[in-house]
Image (cartoon, rainbow over all chains, first blue to last red; front, side, top):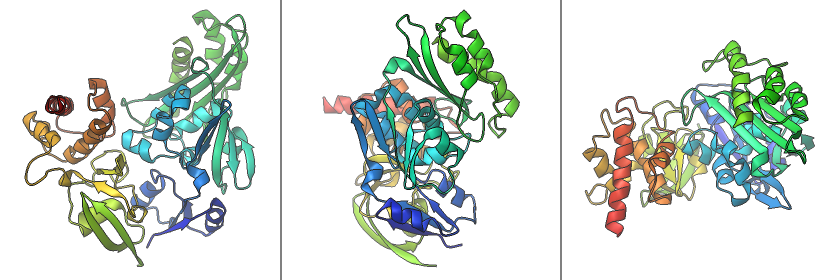
Length: 262
Length: 160
């Protein structure tokens, strides 16, 4: 099956090109070209866009806007994004990070999509050609959407935590990943928390029971126990070559606890 | 099958070819241009043996479409030696016995070069991180890490 590449100067054009059967959007190619290499015959046209909005990184008044073609390595080395650099650095190895894009990560199926987990914890807004969506809504209905950029308030470094758990280190596919934004109150207790989990469903999800249990708690071992016990509520982890659903569910509270206590 | 024109610089030389649409860069480099230094290991982006350097950035040629490479500068391991003189990294890989079967070697050297071009004085941790996208079945990695650190040290000695 001959493959074609269609390069569009605007994302609107790319959106139109995607209506053709067999067309798939290509960012860095780490997922789509891999699929073609593995013999996915449903793919016949790669569609990409060189629209300048896609490669822009803007950080203004504490709010970051990342174009959908921005790579993990550009995020990792951006001076104003050091608070979340760890999440970008968690994706793949050095070559993958030079290719992997924000947009690609948003559409990546579990066990991939670690950066999307971070974006969920950051409560990002996803700007598409068909409107702006809160990231949770976006993740629930990704099909057919064309992403221009994502935006989020950049947290201070102490508020943002991220852990990617993999069998091989320093780089490997996720057993699970956890993103957390913890807002402290005046007494050093947790005022509010956003906890995002990767590989615990077919998309990154929020651990709302754990978030509730953290409200008003300190980050001392005894105080986080209820949240740790609740973090697995409602999860339906995937089973794949990396780990079984059972294993993922077993170790989730362990790694969540370590993340809170670090 | 439609052919598309592609033009880029490969190891300093201008190349212009008609390639199959949708062809990956590794296919074009190996089969069209005769540069077999990038190796087709996994074709999935997980082994790193196909690594090349495009416009100064380490990339995987098995996942790169050749027709997205118009106007770029591509470096492969095959182009590192100049007039028969090995690149310091190639030299140190030999001296430190960092190659056994040699399949990962090109990719390792590309990853190491990408590191040293950015960070001429890496720590061991920096080296491990820089090589984290390259898999080796033979050496157990230690000789490779040593080779990169040795090359870095000899570079800085030469520069001093």
